[in-house]
Image (cartoon, rainbow, N blue to C red; front, side, top):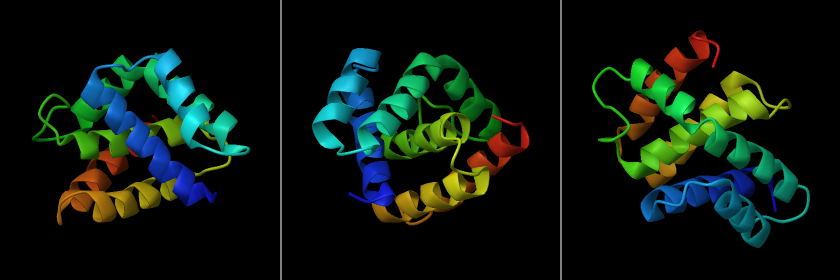
Length: 132
């Protein structure tokens, strides 16, 4: 499993947890163990666990940096991508903000609408300037 594959799975986990209303540590750990492999399991638990623990703060950052949309109105795929990127910025010491943003843009192009990547880029650029 590559890091990109693990990132996609983590985004899907965040999406699934949001859709099911089960944004908690136990669910994050269980899904990371079930779906990730090798060293990506621990990395996934660290990032997903940090996102879940700091969800209110992370969503607050997204809300303050999004001009038009609040998290309650965002496409759930875009929200999962944004949360994951901020999680990587905060909790993955081996990834720069620029890499996290670029990877999020790629996920947006692959999984969301044609223009979502622009929205994702704008929000994450503003978040990075505020030093997540």
